[in-house]
Image 1 (cartoon, rainbow, N blue to C red):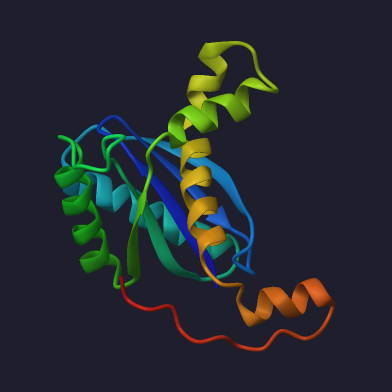
Image 2 (cartoon, rainbow, N blue to C red):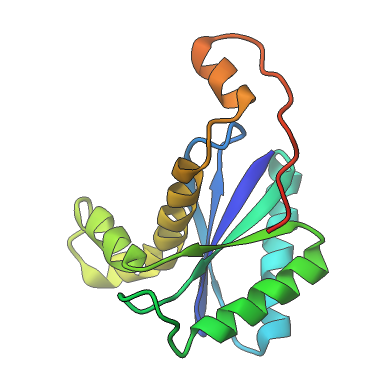
Length: 165
């Protein structure tokens, strides 16, 4: 099963997805949000359904949690927490909050290697930030048996289900 990463913003939501082994994250798309939280959840839900139709099922969702550099909550933190709670309720999936401090800056640096024009980078930034958030989450987890087997060239074994977060 794959994992979806989300960089939530008031105007745009970046979406990334892992590979089937839960090892690598890649940016997928950026959604323009023009409405309330319910609209944002519906847009993300539709995007996940599309991802599943095109590939494997999604087992969990990782949402970037904004915080100040000292780790304390900022004005956006409760908005993202409410979005994540609503997404968890409506999707029935595990939703994990992942610290997103400096991920947009890191994503911009990665994009700048290939693209010098800020206007072009800005269009890709939210999805790239979602990929950074998701990759940090994936790197912090112990490797799954299927990922280990795939790296060793063996047959993957089913791992334990993801815990509710």
